[in-house]
Image (cartoon, rainbow, N blue to C red; front, side, top):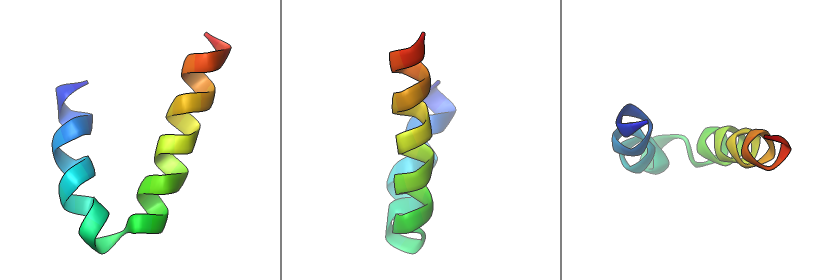
Length: 33
């Protein structure tokens, strides 16, 4: 899970849309679980 936090901040500058989609998926997965 630590690997997810590091690239999140770095990728946020380059791929804000990609991060949003990825984060949204993570939230849905967590809520479903």
